[in-house]
Amino acid sequence: MNTKGPQVTKPQRKKRPKADREELRREFYRAVDACELSVVDTVRHFRFMLGMTQHQFAKFTGVAPRLVIAFEQGHGNPTLRTLKKLLKGSGLDLLVARNNGR
Image 1 (cartoon, helix red, strand yellow):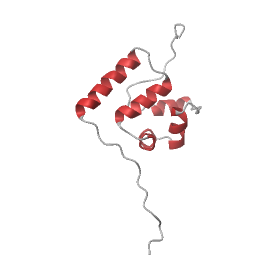
Image 2: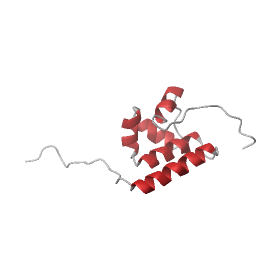
Image 3: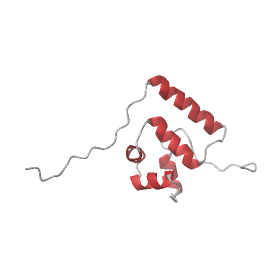
């Protein structure tokens, strides 16, 4: 008799072909360089570019999954330390810039 209940598997994303990953990478860094993304959008696009679920990305960056979920939904209030963790591996850093009326 199985007393553990049904097996639950974590959602896995299929690995994208290398050409698709490279195109996503180019588009991501182009949008960052053009200042087209908010911090939330930057993190979301970076996670998407990596092909990770929110839970996988949380483990990769060392933050709790609930923080990634709340942040991507615009409900989080992360510390600077957490924001830096969310950008781990992106080659990006936080900075303050003038928004030029945007």
